[in-house]
Image 1 (tube, rainbow, N blue to C red):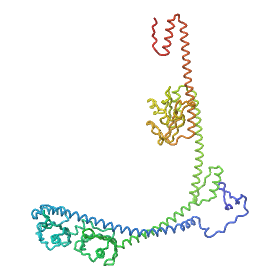
Image 2 (image 1 turned 45 degrees about the vertical axis):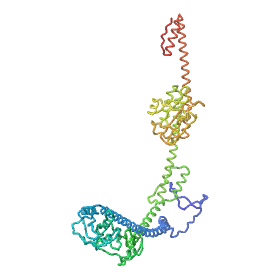
Image 3 (image 1 turned 60 degrees about the vertical axis):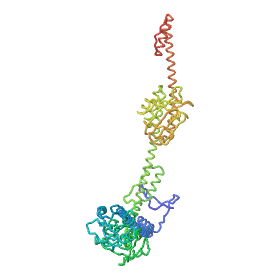
Image 4 (image 1 turned 90 degrees about the vertical axis):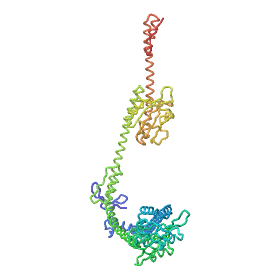
Length: 607
């Protein structure tokens, strides 16, 4: 494969001669004949190609979306019809049950059962006041003549009313829609029998409510643009309707298509055409008392919604195609920087030159790639610098370790040794906290804290802090004579938290030992997870070994010093005894000098 012609070196600007894949220069390079398609700019070609590939999916998706939307809108309309129907049905049933119970409680009162008009009057007035939609509450005798009323109108004869005759003939409840004698308006009358203690019918109790008030009570209403819900009685007369004109007159809907279909036994969803040729969709059903609730909505409303959605969908699709075309063109346009420059820079980096960058031209088609390349070279430089810096830090750490080791070799006091180790370790390596524990005397089960950093260390030393062998990381290291490393203390079973060191997240406990003999434990903590590496472990083990040796040297020095002091004291006592002239004086000198050395009472009386 030959190299493209007229390639220039990005550094020198000199034109590179074409070469074959073997590296030799070719005498001539044949360029393929250009076609009309290849003359179109790359960004336009890629834009068109992308649009050609994705357009079928976009248009297909839009087609499926509009189809699904039509189904969804129809289903949603059906659900709304059914829901509106159930709500009104429930309210009608609840309203009717509530008022029938109220009427039954009233007629069961002794004052009502007495059929005495004067006793009944106050109760009827109180009931009408409690239920404002009842414009009339009254009682009648078995001839249909009023005994008492809640209003001031004259007593009337209702013997021609079904609500009276049915009750007298034994019906437990009567509902009648009529034009009221009192109001002169369409009304609903609910009546029940009045019985005495012997359960004999002695009269009729009733209340009347105009249909407009009932429409408000059961909240029949409209929804969307054409949806309505209304109620009819068992005789197909309007009981409640959102159109006040229909509830203000006694309207018979027996010939209205949905009512006809309902009385023919149809239930649920139906479609019909009214007398004006308008198509409707409805949900019809009866309730327990023979009444029916009908919810209906024009079919054209759903079609209008579907058509509107389709228009919006296709308009949105056109806008999406425009925006998508512009976006693709802009994105493609950002990726047109000459590839040769990138290739040459990559080859230079391969040879180790990490200073390579690509200048981004003003009309850069591969500018984003150029930025990524420059970012990559910058990160490589930073990585290389970071590695060098880490090496430098580790070198300084080793130098500091050497210095600490040197200082340890010169310290002979064990308390000073412990303090120096923890202070130097934390200050040199940036650890969160460090402390040293030692066994004392013959007690090999209790580790006594001998050194700690910061205020926490001072507090623990003042408390005489100890740890039992085998407990926590420190006790475990002492028991096993091995390093215990935990880089996530919160999830470590057996880890002992310290309230003075709340930030501890990593901890390493290193035994201070001479062979199999454990002298103590060197413990270091950090406030970062995974803070300790293998290098830290090796370094702290080395320091622990040096501490053991330094402790041994300090102990040997102390023993040597004590032996030298005893020998000097014995020599001094011998000299003074030799200068005495009697046994008594020699004994006094010996007792006095021993008392001074032991800091005891030297008053001895020799007889």
